[in-house]
Image (cartoon, rainbow, N blue to C red; front, side, top):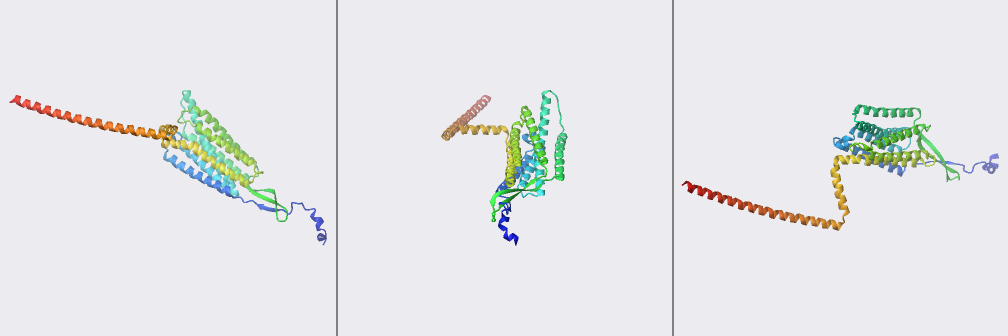
Length: 366
């Protein structure tokens, strides 16, 4: 009875934003479907490039680039594509953990073989300049790659056991009002660990790999052209740096930007990173394996020469060439006819001379 009589005064103690309601933001949207589609296309491209690399593994361009290391790079790109797809799925403990595993192992399998190969080539080049011979066993190179990948796997195991990435909720008080006049609380789900140290170490490790690869690529700029990949690597590493900076910026802006937007943008960035690596690093090698550089140069020169002339000039040039070729054919035909007639006359003269000689010889004998 007292509450009913004093309801108006009691309402003054209730905050204006109450009663509040909760709205769970839909995680999967059109942007996620677009990112997943782009990542799936990248997977198909990686498979096609892998098959083409295996088919042309005995060609000069692929042999100098070491097919085993190229296969490891392609496996790394495949892992990055899978991680990009998992990044756009609904967060759960399994998808959150698998995303970090695929992304970190993917970038390790892509960059570590490059580091080991370029370091070995630089060492051989430096010893050659000093007139020294240096031999490397491929077994040692593979063991170096395996040791670094094993260390990364151990870090991921510790991360998964101690503080695995799980689905966490991020609540935001919006300005939207519900039916009762209260504000709406929006909940966004995201993948995160309790401590940010793990993801920070992951980004620092990737930054260290990119920095080391950049230094080695700069040192290899004077290596023999068949083994020189400094230009391609510089472009690829520059793109990797930009992707890493974007990922770090999106990670730090998660409290401000919705988690759904962050994951969708990250998926597109990762897929684009794989796409540019295939285009910049693998495409020239495969083209050189299929079409030698000399033929490519001739085709390029002819294309440039034809592009410099206008279309009417090209027509006149083609007509002039056809006229010259027809005149040349006619001249060759006349010459061949004259040659045949002269040879026939010569044969006739030889026959007459032989018959005359034989007749004179018979008369003399008689």
